[in-house]
Length: 194
Length: 305
Image: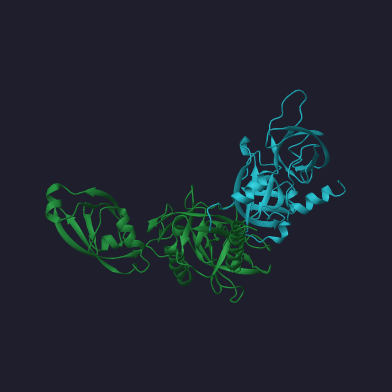
């Protein structure tokens, strides 16, 4: 086996991940979370990352592109940001339901402000949380549960399979387990946006 | 598609295969409030889990891979090694395929598995961090091999197996034996303890009924007796193996069964052996500066519960 391991799929995915922050008037945005280029100017992130109706995308080459929050689902913790002119390569996606427990997964995000950091692990389950993992009633949603390290700054970033296809949006950590919103739920929110 | 992508996808598939293979022999154990723990179907009708996750002795149930929930009875528990054994109806699910932990080396890819509900098995992924020989954990039990990994033992993963990339089970993971790293109770220890728990419901450990302290012998005794030190008897319980054998306060035990004794570890190794209870062992003792041989019939340590 070559020594490159995940570097090829990780490099391709990193090109589609941007920083995102609430747009504060007159101040330069800092990368508070991550967002995923679903098309060249449409970005998916966590609703808790973009609490206002405007947000600024920070591309990998350092451009700050203003955008509007065009859809949000606070319950499912997903938001869609339209940033015209961002021109970031779009990701490929896959349905996590096709993956088995133990499949390799990796996350890209900005944990504690480190840009485009990669962490790797395996899929645990795509299901509601087990009884005993408390999550204020949200445990009955279907979550991607993974053994992969996430930290503040990963929110809104992708969780991907071994081929670099995005399977979910990193949301939070519960009982040490990384949780991501599955792609089908994201696509439900995106339905109708062109 | 490049070779790298194919290789990586194959590794991913292999890991998922390993989870499916080993996961077929796992149950969720319901023996505590809220979160279940994981059990391994070690032999037909016999489930092994960690002792710390068994909070009640009755009304225990297990969830099988097919989602059925069936009753289980507690065959026994051993705090010293953090293992507990349950009996379930034979033929309920496949039996675990065991590996040889001696073949694992630091850097080998491994998985920790769990089953928490009627859903599929769950997995955590990492590498073997350290291996070594026999050791004694802080709970007092003898663990046949040192086997630590960088796996996260998530809630409910205790009692689940350490699995190699081929799906073989190398032991039972315990979150209770060490803080920093995941500790695995290896196959040999599980086999040894399980056999005793099935036979008598507990692990018998030897007892002689005396309090001791390690001491160095004085220079002349060291030279004359060819022993560096031993265990000094501080008190001897009445009607105990030590008193029945005529051991006295002030005696220094320097050898047991021909093996030098300089500290508690050697004594505990002898008393921890599975078949020691009832055996007559020869103690070499220094009494008032003179070597004396004393035969002791090893008793059985009283149990905490």
